[in-house]
Amino acid sequence: MSQAKPNKLQRIVNKCYQLPKSLQAFALSTVFGRVIKFAGTAGVEVLELKGNRSVLRLKNRKKAQNHIGSVHAAATGLLAESATGFLVGIHLPDSKLPLLKQMQIDYIKRSSGDLTAVATLTDEQIAAMHIEDKGEVTVAVTITDSVNVEAVSAKMTWAWIPKKR
Image (cartoon, rainbow, N blue to C red; front, side, top):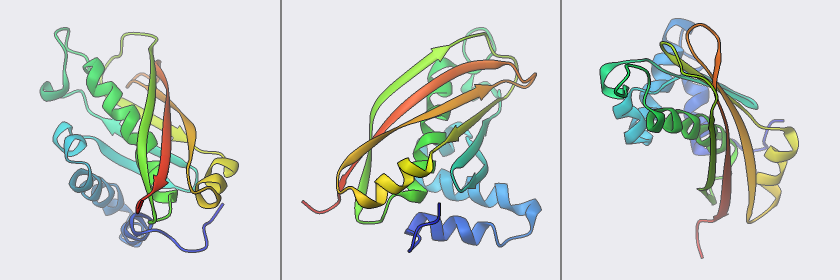
């Protein structure tokens, strides 16, 4: 579903997609890291942010590791929150403020290597963001590791309210 008028974040994302393909993920990740400082510090990368889907990656680097050498549980939560939040962010009109309301994270299996998160929205969820002044959506996200094993399943509930009260 396309919106009538892209919001500020969507316009920036659109500009990133006008770059040569080899630079798109770098540009998206740089923008994202500047907007969400914590995610930038952790090294969250945006691989895809189009339509109703986002794909983000967090490499298994020292700064994001736990005591057993895999990506820390909190860093994994940051990846899930980032994948869903950035996706909500490109669809929510500029007049509305997104707020994370609830996180449900199920750690299914010990991960190996880098993590990739895929989050999706339905057309109905995107429409609700445009129609309703206040509301919420629950966004599913799946996180797989470098051997394509589903390590984490999560749901993030994002609410929105008007920016001006």
